[in-house]
Length: 129
Image 1 (tube, one colour):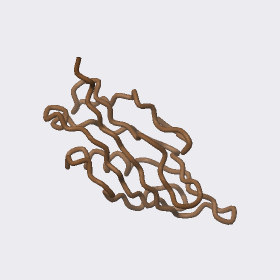
Image 2 (cartoon, one colour):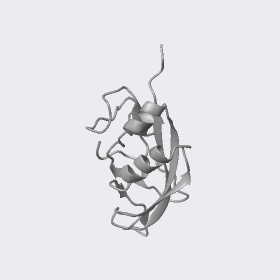
Image 3 (cartoon, helix red, strand yellow):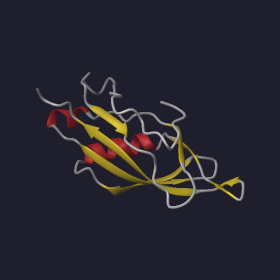
Image 4 (cartoon, one colour):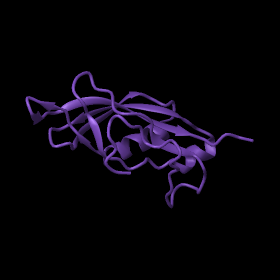
């Protein structure tokens, strides 16, 4: 997914697919806009995280909150876990995905400025019938 404004969350029905993850209806997605104390930090490019196959097998799910430091050009400078999902596999997958993202930084005095935001990434298993 690309060019996702901060005022819109990534779609909650976007299932991740890869050779490493079984084709399942599990969801791994950016769940909400980044949270920034001041200004507006927006998503410019988002690639949905891959739901780790071993986490699927173990039935792991949860939401990871990542503290993301963004440079004035929108590139990622640093990604840290603000709050774990409870699964190191999901935390690692979220961190790896977000490192590839790009952001539109806030404007300060009309010029882009470096910023830090909190980015939630949700991993959910399909509901059982």
